[in-house]
Length: 121
Image (cartoon, rainbow, N blue to C red; front, side, top):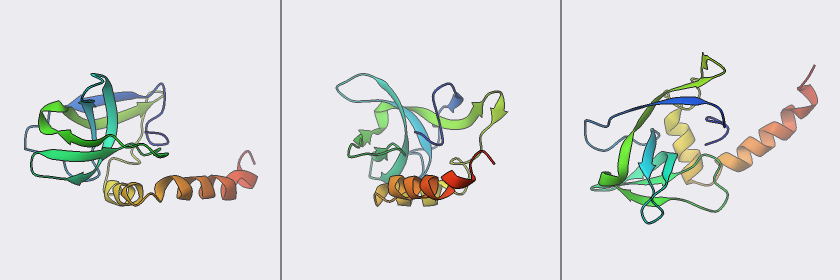
């Protein structure tokens, strides 16, 4: 989920009580078949399932995840004791759209290269 959730971040996961999570929401789920816990973003919804993809997508998606595999939605992210807001508020819709159209990673890489000369000043 980098850059919005990184190693060492503390996340709060709340139960999903009102049907399927919305587009752009970040959810915890059990990956079918692999039985591993994953945290990724919802980029589309279907009848009783969601299409999930990580923000740092590089050719792999989790695909359609049935509702029974969803454990909860990420409601808070803390990094070094401070809340991280980027990625869970209204901007989640834009992030989900960019991720679903395969533009998020290239945009992030372009921004990092463009901002690199200013980093550390």
